[in-house]
Image 1: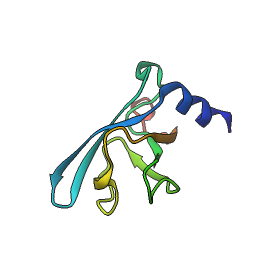
Image 2 (image 1 turned 30 degrees about the horizontal axis):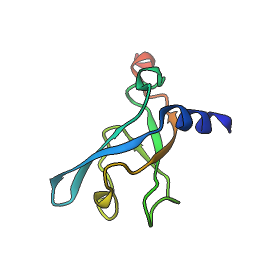
Image 3 (image 1 turned 90 degrees about the vertical axis):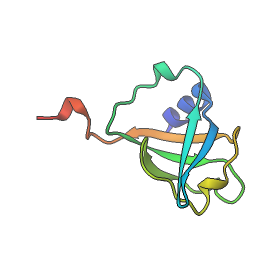
Image 4 (image 1 turned 90 degrees about the horizontal axis):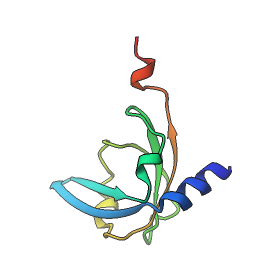
Length: 97
């Protein structure tokens, strides 16, 4: 229970850019502090919670390359705070056989 609080306090994730890739597709770029110390591997996912009016109470599991839900994520603005929990999942390169 302490880990998500620690990770979010340490890294202070924020939306830095939202780019419309197509009519129904956006890319959300998130940045933070000390990202090099974040222990994450390709194949894992986070539960993203964007602290934006109307969606702060929703947490959605997105991999780092999953398409967003265009109904609300396309309205995020740079500087929006982000809380996440994770990483979760074991579909990682070190599990490959």
